[in-house]
Length: 165
Image 1 (tube, rainbow, N blue to C red):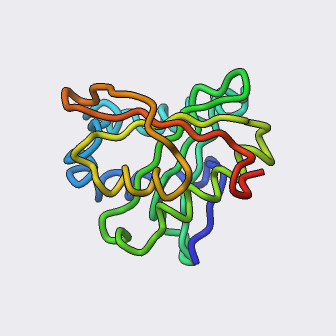
Image 2: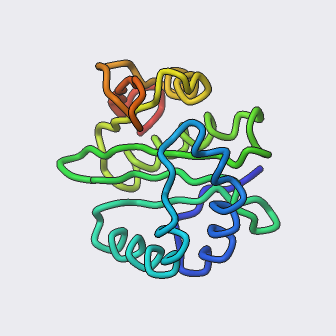
Image 3: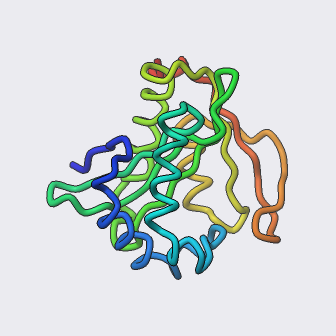
């Protein structure tokens, strides 16, 4: 079973492969990172690690036994006991419940290790898979939004419910 790991410097090569291989797949349902992200990947990676060290964000990778990155699951804009949740799973790893299990685990980590009480998320209306993951993991719809020019929904999850302590 893949393992969630807090982002480290040595994840950079596998993470870059993951992002490049799945770029078009991700861009179909979430905002594209843009060419600059890939051109400056090492700098961006170091900046993410610095944000993590400051407690502003917690970046995680979902890694298989061979060290290949199968997904990312992040908590960003951490403040006042809450954070925004974001995740992406490699195209070849979809349909196996990895996103659902990763979101459940990150809810436990958020409450237990990071002391968070609330997570927010958003998904485009046309991203049925992501909306299903959020619903299965205890998030409830709180409103509407626009993501990449398309209609989306906002979600909220209060931690400490359903074992996320």
